[in-house]
Image (tube, rainbow, N blue to C red; front, side, top):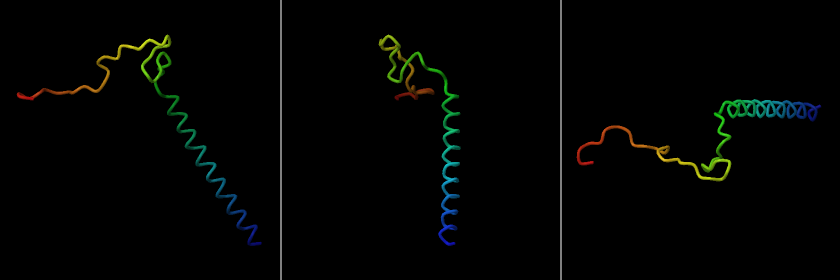
Length: 70
């Protein structure tokens, strides 16, 4: 009887783990689906032909006014 109760408890635990995993996976896939489509370029900044794109000015830029003597 004790073994059956432990088995039932463990089964319930595994069900909860599976539900949590599937919920997180669903949220992740929805997030990825909402990302902007950048299929024309890969992450290294090369276009489909392999030529490097002009990425001038796309990095972090200092904003605001510079003080005198800066």
